[in-house]
Image (cartoon, rainbow, N blue to C red):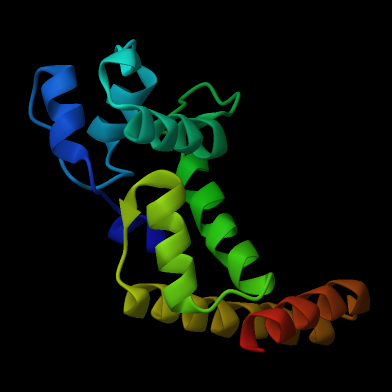
Length: 150
């Protein structure tokens, strides 16, 4: 999944703030739990604080019992990448947007691979939907494929 390839650019700053070693991976369990804890975000510079808060608001807010280790953050992140593509951004622009908005570094090639995998999965869903006569689902899936491939 694309979340496995996302790294915080400012992981060392968060590590110093937390007072213990943190992995660079944005969606690692340790990082998610640390971001959900009571860190003093005011100690960070304005730009980093805004990126962390945007990350928190967009990906870590859910009502699951096991939050933030429930899987919702990773799903929300994947959905965000697909939405950005459907809104017309290419893989390089998506990587740049994610870096600017959340301070998360990703290789554009990783984004491209994820989008290609997503299209293949959507094609499989469409095929099964057609076989089962679920035309509405098949049409919605085909629309998403078209928006990702354009």
